[in-house]
Picture 1 (cartoon, rainbow, N blue to C red):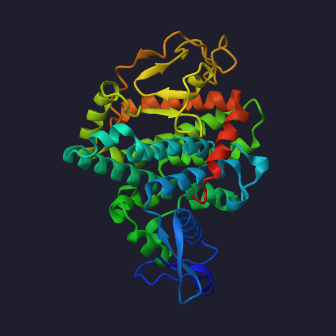
Picture 2 (cartoon, rainbow, N blue to C red):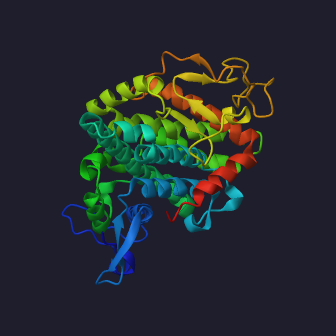
Picture 3 (tube, rainbow, N blue to C red):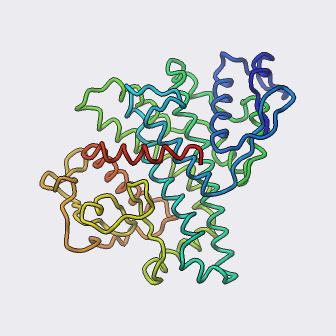
Length: 383
């Protein structure tokens, strides 16, 4: 995988394709090309030095390492880290990446479970199970990788060139990237050309546009108005993530749907199977203590103390405990019949909404804890 680097800048980043425009340094297409390259380098390892003096890179194929790097990048975008040229005074404007860090941490945990869990070793030798497991891991890898390639550059662009953001939002188009970047993208695994086409070549969508345009409003808002804007931006970007990227690249696949149906059944029937849940922690597992139950959202069930009524704008129960969740005597609350099929966009959205609500509640009430966990995930950048 090559890089367009300094020598390409000196050449003006011209695009040799017929009927394509010239991509020069001041243009949106140059900036999108540069940030796309920066994004895939974060999940690559350096290789040999090329003739132009630039260094080649190879995508990390190890699922665990790649997932950790993606989670770390999301965490660093939220934390406004120096390596993404962030502004710590503006921390909080990028809310989706904070939740994204926890979500990809769960993907990492899924990969880890597939490699190490005893139950997987006991049944993993069965040909049918082995085939299904490989197919599901491939689907998870594809969705996780291309979501990262699609969504990280939006945030990085606003960090680097906020004054050009509104104009350049409408001009992101993989077909107009610098030729070297386009060639690199075509060489990537997980059905690169087909995946990019399914994502409409990284062009902006209505939900994306609405979420992205809230960055500036979040920066300018006071302490009272800011949380609602953060939540709104999170929801718009999550709608795009779920309904466009993951639905098209992962959940629309008939074989993936078949496997997920079986997984939903075996989750409660087979001891030791991994739960379909999100833990708001850098760790993959949490001890079942009362405080920790507030950090877990399980698909198909309400959580301990999760009240459907009597919530304020932040989703908080005014009469809840210090964690924002009043404990109940049972491990989980009522079963949610309408939230069983992970591949069904509408059912999955019910789960994602509960995850977003819990995340937002914790970010507002347990900020120090949550940011400590995000910082721990951010430390994985060189995995």
